[in-house]
Image 1 (cartoon, rainbow, N blue to C red):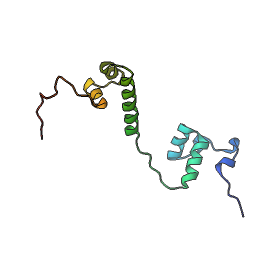
Image 2: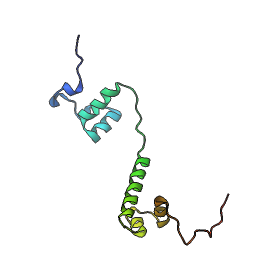
Image 3: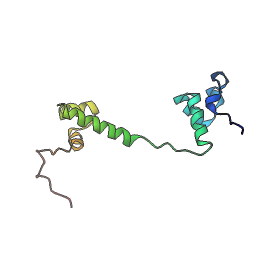
Image 4: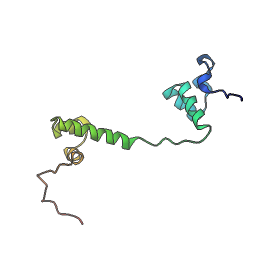
Amino acid sequence: MRKSLRIADIPDDALPSIDDLNGDLRIMAGLVGVRQALVIAEAFDGTPIRCYGIKKLKGRWRNSAIRQMADNGVSVIRLARMYDLCDRQIKNILGTVDEETDGRQLRLF
């Protein structure tokens, strides 16, 4: 049985340069390196892939960090400044109620 050649078997000096790559593969190689980009391309074997944005993941990480810092005694105001959010948004993330408006605002529905 014949073994197929894999990117992992190719020596570094035989790899193409970034300039020899086309399209998205060139962009990927600029981010992760030529070998890693080719390994990814080899794994998907021509299948189109879509990389979704990571905004939700970053938001979850930020919220988790905010909760942890609040648990360690960092104030809402300081957290708001650190993460460029308003204090109300920090309170929403922490699940706390703002006593100033609690009960005074009418429900819409």
